[in-house]
Image (cartoon, rainbow, N blue to C red; front, side, top):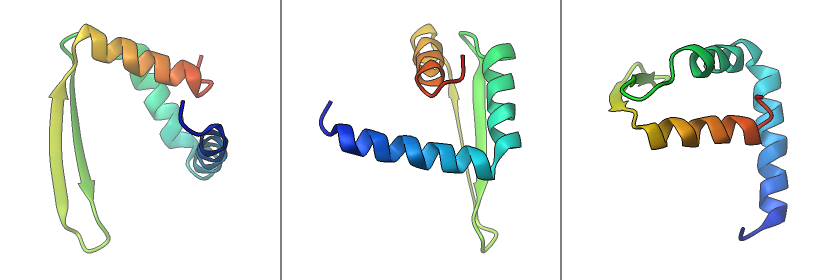
Length: 78
């Protein structure tokens, strides 16, 4: 771990984000609980304020799923 103070700052930013977007975080939690398994394809499209979109996807491995579950636990999701 390089900088514990940076980690605390990130935690505060995460808490502020979840306060502003509680339904989004609940949606992500639902996906993690019900749809994350090896072979799942995550498909994401992001549209900026000017309407320009970027799209990408990834097929999850067992290691990817374990990593995402661990991140969720670290953020207090379980």
